[in-house]
Image (cartoon, rainbow, N blue to C red; front, side, top):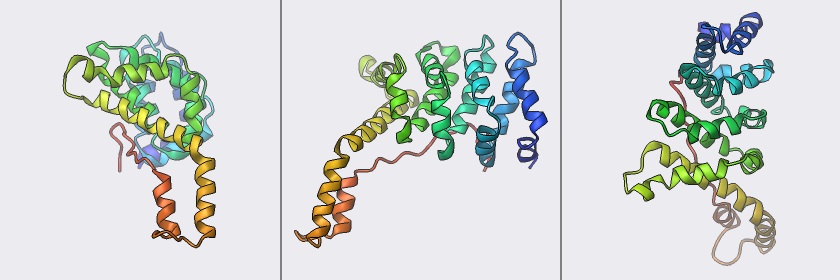
Length: 227
């Protein structure tokens, strides 16, 4: 497909990144849109993140662009990149990316609802990587914003919408990783004890192991991904 070929044309991608950083230019939003469409191909994510070091800073900058369409496409691009497990840590650790996404989630205007939803979806995807837990906790107002969005339905009495659901899911996933970190040593010792006893007590070692893992499940959300 042409998207696969373009993503591997270094000259083309570097030009798109350069144009995307020129916010006053009329071509700025178009360049960001092209990058976003390239991320819709699943096999492009790793290529774009690991071969073009200036891409993530450019997208982070575009998330705060004065152009509404540029903001939307920048967030959608990050959303698609965050689907690839190998890209989640680089995206989250890129300076100010989580902060910029948090700022978009704080924007409650109806005109920005799609952008806000895409930003929350990106945070949800990034939360499913344990290496990103610290990034969520050190960014000012990130956890607070997640709580405010997640509790919006209980405050208003309205039905839980997609945005609220994803905020709840993000908090649940983060709490899962925190629990794994906090109880990891105790669980490891318990599993060793079970293994050494031959799995006695009515359960096999493997079933005991499964009982202690309490793994969360998360289906990543994407923006118009191509199969």
